[in-house]
Image (cartoon, rainbow, N blue to C red):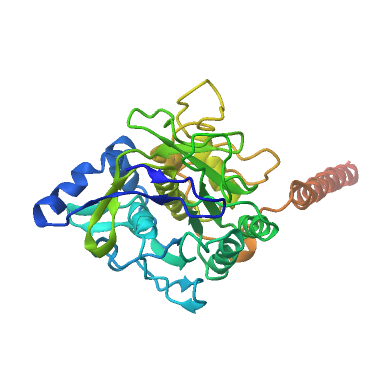
Length: 372
């Protein structure tokens, strides 16, 4: 049940998952086994946002069609054979992640994802032997070019120049890259989770505490549930497993909810909103085990979050809903430009008013002198 993460750097964070039959009685009980939905107050979050209008790219082993993903699975791309369509998955890992992010279930049965109205863009990188850092970089570039707003990378790879640049470019384009830290329990957080501009995610247990096998370190920013996680599997079945892969997928779903609610925010501001509202679950303040704490989706959607230091755009509360801006306004204007444009008209206006008042006083004085 523990996700295998002892392969060479550059391999997928894959799972030795328990396959659960998809018979009617079992399917009816699937939702009850999604304990993390209640822990994260997902029903309350869905009253605010369900991720409508957001596309989440899943860079993984592909995503197989599943009854609980019907209607929100796009074609994507297969980088293993350099051809369109990432809707094939022989290992199941990508299908697992897709269900956690955007499973729609069927009424009260089946898997309910964190962002059930979001679309999934499956980007198949191949099998664990050939899914390397540069392929991940290509997939990130593809996701940005095809208008994904969130990228889920539930995998652990070594850093490369192309991968670091791809993450940087995605961040600059307003795309949130979410990465899994790894399941080795050491301090070697994998990439892209450890890359500058990405959101590195670790795992917590059912008590909201750091999971012992979750890789941690100074680049880790947040944790989310990652133990006894049930989700979509191959052939319309379900699987249960442990790992930071699941945690990253849950956070990717949360990022989709926040993006849908606050379309005007930059990628950095969305990451800031998610981390600033996390529940501290360890040593007071930030720590290497879970960064800023455990994910709190409802607070991420509703709290008044001060903007990042040096940012000229605030991260508004849920009561402040602005329409989606044009693409050219994704990046806030520098503070110096804002001050220059905002203060000059005010000064001119004050001068004009003073001159008008002075003229009026002079006119009245002259009239009075003439009347004497």
